[in-house]
Length: 370
Image (cartoon, rainbow, N blue to C red; front, side, top):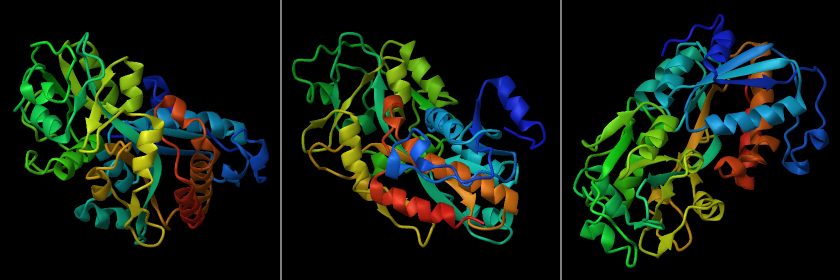
């Protein structure tokens, strides 16, 4: 998807994508009056460029809507436009200077770092983990409620080794569940998807003896039908009896799909805010300085009771330095609110708020942008 900077906001409004209000006063906003809850709120030094824009991950689209509402409360008059396309497009358009920040569910690849550095005027790009969300293994099997799947079984389904819902591999973990002989219809994300990359990294870590196909932003399972966006895969499963997909929890819930429990060896774990939060708290930063790339591989292999390990993080990819002063000020203000009080209403749309220690690191990193 090619995006031209001029007229972008108008085009996005026409397309019905998110247009986020940024801050519109040159005075510091009072965190105590932003509706977000006291010490979690980030101060916003509103000002700078009147309109900034971002592009990328569809996984964070619903979170961006919440950031919009909070940002409008904190500031008025400035705008931020976010086009929910794909992680691949987000990186591509950020590197091409067509947007001010990119949203990606995976960090930059080694070969993407140099072009992003050049885009930032020779300064390093940094990853800011702003949105956390559990990934649901979502299905449509009428009458089969509370299905439990092991990582090995999930890997077999998405590689075409298990093809019906009454397969013994599924039945073994679902005593008492009415499993029909309905064929399994795998739906996956087509094109470059950070959700796909995270899902396949999960399978590589949690089911290494079964999933030997590797990871990457393109689905390599070799089975099923591809759809371009998170909303599309969820809608396709809703319309296909026997369908199954991997999708952010908010999309599974909004389409009233079944969500499988995952048994990694310590018992079935239902996807909830608490179980996803328990897993997310185990994630460690492996980036250096203000580059907050997380080590998710250890999390994906987690076998802890009550922890739901299939989660993803969406990074906002920005320049550490290299923006003009007006752009830097607007980007910092928007990200500061999103990382602060903007997190407070995310649970209602299927995300998990940032752990407190990561909020602190994010605040430091955002403040350093220039």
